[in-house]
Length: 139
Image 1 (cartoon, rainbow, N blue to C red):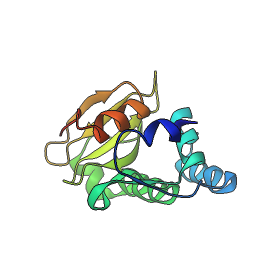
Image 2 (image 1 turned 90 degrees about the horizontal axis):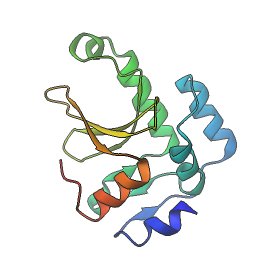
Image 3 (image 1 turned 180 degrees about the vertical axis):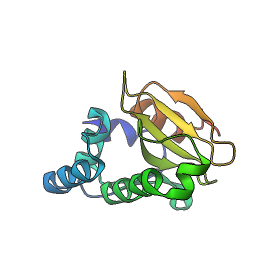
């Protein structure tokens, strides 16, 4: 189980697992399957909250809502590069967002909300969590 690994990395509050139906509804709304590691995490804990309420892993509902907003907001389409190849799943607490790529090995990027840059931060969602929770990753 992925959750057993995470519990050793730092303080966090874990949600109850998302139901299979809710997970399918999230994927239906997004229009594609979630990357396997993200899907597995949600099946074990529907969200991980860090210190001060930081969204280390959003709930399936928030993933659905925020990604729909990012992809469909007309102002965002005018201001930013397309978000279609990404699934946002966490935030840095400063306006920046973490996203997993829908292609390749499903690597994790941080999107800078000020300059619209997307910078690689981890090879996997689990590595992002480990690095963020242990303080190795900083944005």
